Length: 84
Image 1 (cartoon, rainbow, N blue to C red):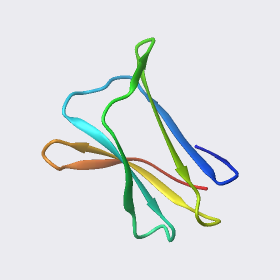
Image 2: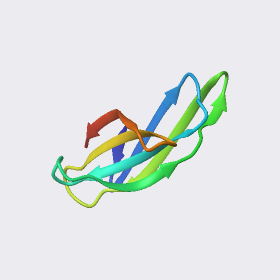
Image 3: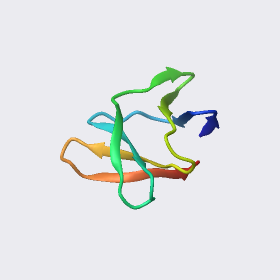
């Protein structure tokens, strides 16, 4: 994750892209109450890995993000959580 001016860039790599799931990008100003601000359905394949990128506009001094991996049945896991 990087922060430049008012733009926050989230990016990550995955070794595989299993079928039947997607990523939700969630944002919070207090680190407790998160809201979905983006959905990524697939990554860009490069040399056997999948690259994911998301850009957001920062609205406060500290912002919390988490990347949620969601399966078709609604179950999920938090893949990453960061603050800027």
